[in-house]
Image (cartoon, rainbow, N blue to C red; front, side):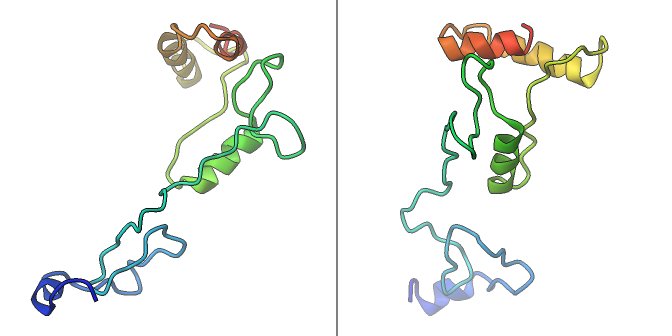
Length: 123
């Protein structure tokens, strides 16, 4: 059991309401969470071929597929990741602002996939 009784009494134990099922870190005797050295997140595989692909090919304009975004958001609760803004948008709308922000951030992307993604976003 980690820590002394005095140390463990300093922290209140986690009750059933605060526990989250499927949490990557185990609970210690005092109710805190400790990482045992495993990576905290399992990365989304960058597949561009096959049935369960998460990314588009560079010919299709690169970027994530709607299914890939859905999978990512399931693995990362609270994420606000969205797909590309590809259609016609109203000036000053949220989508137009997202596009403008993306285009500004990705200005330095010179690789094939980066150029394809910028083309898809209409930068």
